[in-house]
Amino acid sequence: MNVKSVLRNAFALVAALTMTGMAFGQTVNYNYDRGTDFTKFKTYKWVPITGAKHPDQITDGNITSIMDGILAGKGLVKKDADPVDLFVGYGTTTQDQQMITGYGGGMGFRFGGMGMAETSTIQNGTILVDIYSPAEKLLVWRATATETLDPSSDPNKNYNNLKKGLTKLMKNYPPPVSK
Image (cartoon, helix red, strand yellow):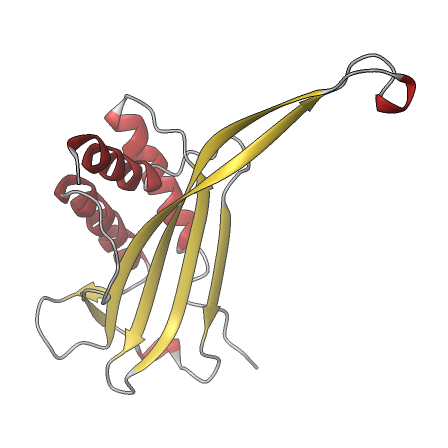
């Protein structure tokens, strides 16, 4: 790998986590095991997800500290050792997407007019959060947030956007009680 490629990949991972949403907005999805009683969960610890990509140490620390605050606000206590009620892990990805912008000219192709199109590449970043019950060895909750990336040169703005994105991602945890 050359230096340009390494820097581009590092930038893409950091950008994936800024969650600024300029062009298309943020898409958040979640799913959960409906047979799970989420009220019984009181403690958690961070675990790696096999094969998951992670950003640099600073951004990784920002993600886990923001998530620790969100989970504490939901009544969960972080522990560093077993036994715990939940395992929490995350990963990130980035993907290039082609945008085509068309411009019409004259009265259209049918009447002899000319049209033009420009293509540009935008990047979409996704963060995935998985929550497992170690007792049942079961994935009980999963959420993803996908965002068009437009990072700022201001690290405080990026941090605040990351916090907003993770808060939105975790909005539906714990899920509503089924009847």
